[in-house]
Each structure stands twice: as C-alpha cells, then as structure tokens.
Image (tube, rainbow, N blue to C red; front, top):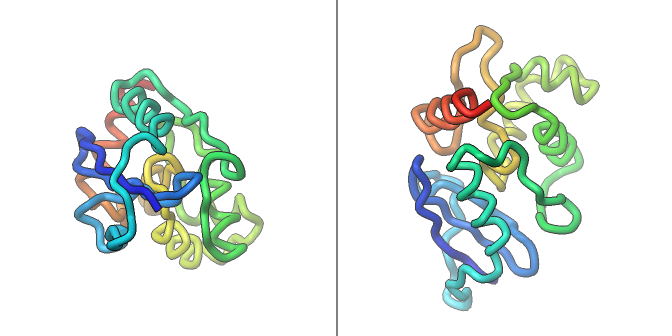
Length: 160
C-alpha cells in the first residue's frame, strides 16, 4: 500500500492506494486512513491524481478524468456505491440536496441513508460529496469541515 500527503489550498490531504487510489481524505478528518508500518510513502502511484488535483485547485479542471473501475478502488455497500456514482453526476459548481440525491437514486425517502453514505465517501473532492447540501440550502456534514466545504463550493462557483 502506498500513501502520500498533498498540500491543498483547503488543507492537507492524504491519498492511499495500491494499484489504484483507494482514499483521499483530509488529515484533520476522523475518517482519514493512517499509514501502517508496511506502507510506503511515495507520490509516484498518485501522479495522475496529483496533477488533476493541482488543475482542480488552480481552477482549470472541472471534471476529474478518473474512472471508478480503472483508476479508483472504492469499497462500500451496493447502496453506498450507488450514491457515490450519483455524486459524480453533479455538475461542477452546482449543488443538490440530500433529498434530491435520494430521488436520483430512486429512493426518495432514503435521504438520511444518503447522508450517511455521503459521509462514508472514501475519495473526497474527486467524488464531490461537498456538492450536497441541506434542503434549506445550508451547508451540512462534511469530513473536511463546513469551512472547507464552503471553500470548495466557492472555488467551483468562481471558476464555473
């Protein structure tokens, strides 16, 4: 398993993975994956991701060119996978509510379960869970913190 740290404008991020990116989390997040003794710190396995993160934070990348089955290894329940795949369809700079996301996956009463699945997203930013907000437009629940969620949405709206 490989890992590296990325210094982003919204804080330090940790990337982990083997042959594919498995997690991208905020170092301040409770869900971050801590390196184990047999892991290797190396940026090379993440070169494509790091280049795209630079472009995203620079305002020139609107959609990550990473494919779930080829570049990303995401472990989760079928329901979580369904939610995460739907997150990828939210356009850059736009937001939807948890209820709207639940409707989009064909389960309109599951907005709480959608929120929980959203919170378990192992690949923040690339799978844009920050684009999901409360039905009243409030910024709620984000592993990097509400201030980071606000910064990410502001970045996208300014460059959209």
